[in-house]
Amino acid sequence: CNGKTDEKYPELGQVCDGPDGDSCANGTFTCSPDGSSVQCINEFPTNVQELCDNQDNDCDGTTDEGFPLGQACDGPDSDECKNGTWSCGKVGKLECTNETVLNIKELCNLKDDDCDGATDEGFGQKGLKCDSSADSDSCETGTYQCTPQGTLACTGDNACVSGASCKISQSSAELDQCLCGGSSICSSSQGDSCSGGVCTCKGGSACGFGQKCTASGCKPL
Image 1 (tube, helix red, strand yellow):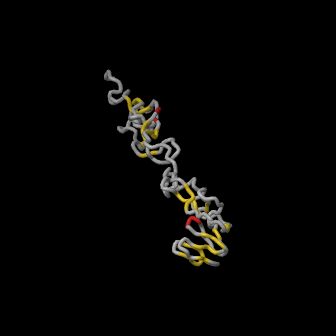
Image 2 (cartoon, one colour; image 1 turned 180 degrees about the horizontal axis):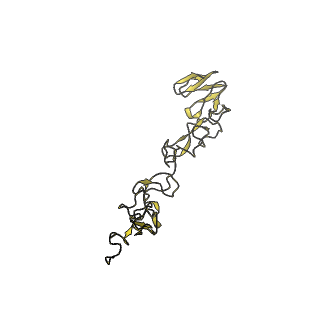
Image 3 (tube, helix red, strand yellow; image 1 turned 90 degrees about the vertical axis):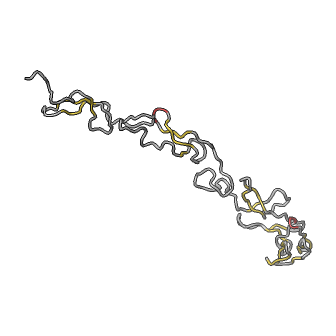
């Protein structure tokens, strides 16, 4: 009866932050039911979440915490290389932007160009036997290998000489052989010739059964 009301509680009616997940003062101090204290009630909204929008949404004194802003990321292109950076986008969401190189394609070069954890995928024929289009036979004495340009090409294929026959292997990894009688690898690519079942090497060596022509003459098979 001193003419004043609730004078022991100066915070009464002031804004306050209740026991929720944010630090925003969205409630008001109100007298407790027993009148012994004040309590923060009527808070709205509660548990305000931090957004990626350059603002302190949850009122904790920091901005955009919990978002990996500036870190490397991979945007919505066809490769998986992290050439972009995380930044705040529309409606408070995280977006990968400013990607400098897009849609990196895998090359045949023993490298993981598109950053997907695999190497030279898409070049399944690498290492298998092949026949070069540069010769007229169908003997697969070459292998598919990576080129300096990152493509796949048939390399090392030897053209069979006139009079030689092709011994076809039963495996896609094992090369065919140009046979002249009992000799193998008798090829015009090496400058050999085949006559009467004998392969004559470029240097003049005549290779018979169980031998093959090489750059240095006849060698055992």
